[in-house]
Length: 462
Image (tube, rainbow, N blue to C red; front, side, top):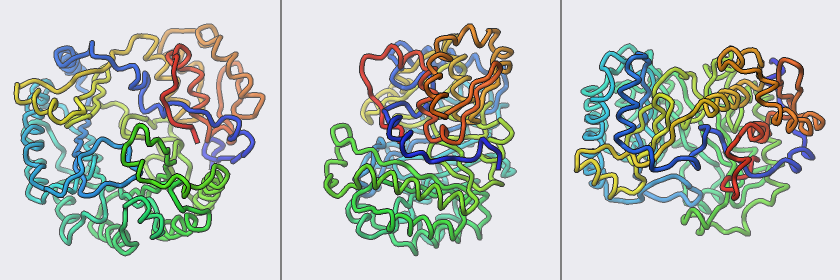
């Protein structure tokens, strides 16, 4: 394993640097989005990208869930009424038609993702219809070479669900597990058996899904190093290609369902760090590579290969190997990355429906990136994806002298260098194993907006 793919867990450093900060799924972050970028401006930008011929990436937000998980901070609609999906899908088809008119049909969709909520909330017939409608407006690949993925709730998988998804063209699944411990599951209202999870993973392998990813959450009520370690051990035994280990951020003032979690049952900060340290050790000893920001992958997985090859990318769906796509966000709250812009649809379903009923795109805010934004995004992306940065690469791409342009930032990195988080030479920045868990802190030094911010609106970095 290369230096950039090893990790040191230094408790003293983590405690000192464990401040709040962005996750950098974008730069500038969503805090900078404004209503000056509306649907009309978005349409202009979108049409302007056709000259590039770049491939497309489609993200579909399906917001519905049958039951609420108390830890959830996603934009969702909790309902037992499956009929509520119909009016939403009808608007989604209108939105696809409007978006499809903006992009040349010659541009292939090399990446597609259904997220939520619970995408498998919709019926099998509705899944078929949604994919058929997508094919009407965009050029989907029929040879299984695209990266077509879907988030799966094991409780929403029926006997033939996975077979249907595979037939529709999906070749990757992401599975929400969180924790196998029954006490923890009951405390967060996410009760699912280990047998349900394992049966989905086994079936996915049998059907030839190219990749399975499992999501776990640490910091939930009643978790201990022993109980969570047991969950991690059982997941390692089934050897998924990717494992994400997310930090639960308890923010009940912002996310109403979290008010139903017993704060006294949450692990204390020391136990939480012990859980994280132990999990990292378990996964790395099992051969998983730390990709960064909660993500681990087997060494032969595309993410690990892309990190070694310096082609890894990061966007609103996390780490990705498709950096050359224009990302079209479809559905309420979805974010698009088209040209040098970010754009977002209305969160509120009524407003989302109203726009499409009036034959208008539901984009209500976003931001266009200026030259400085593009430069800083490149720097932050290189650091958060590859854990190293060659000044000459940035200078060639942006026509600057790195040491002059970022003199203030290089000065700001000196305390981190003294602490062993990174190494700065005359021509490069290299993140050290002790700095990989704290990569958000390093990236924050290059964030111009954060320097100017008067209030903090982010979760803790660990």
